[in-house]
Length: 113
Ligand code: FES
Image 1 (cartoon, helix red, strand yellow):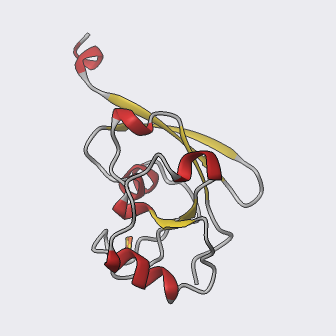
Image 2 (cartoon, rainbow, N blue to C red):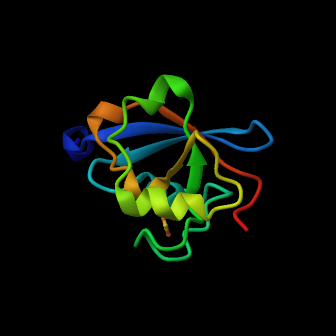
């Protein structure tokens, strides 16, 4: 079928209550968009992916941290103002879905505000 031609990447979202949600996402969208499209709770994405709100913050486990492209200055700055952020935090809208991150696991906070 035509779907076999699509490049799908699996992303696993772990909820604050340990609920595991596996999402198949098309290459080229962001991890935030994959979450919103699949109604993953805990991702608000108020700014729609403009790297301006930090309500798409997720926690990346250590085994994945080095496999993601590094934060740019904008993402770094925004995370500093996010009260729930820690050293594991990334903005999901700044992580592009690609085959390289197939199987990525990220944890979502209880809420974003
Ligand atoms: Fe606003 Fe990611 S959606 S910073």
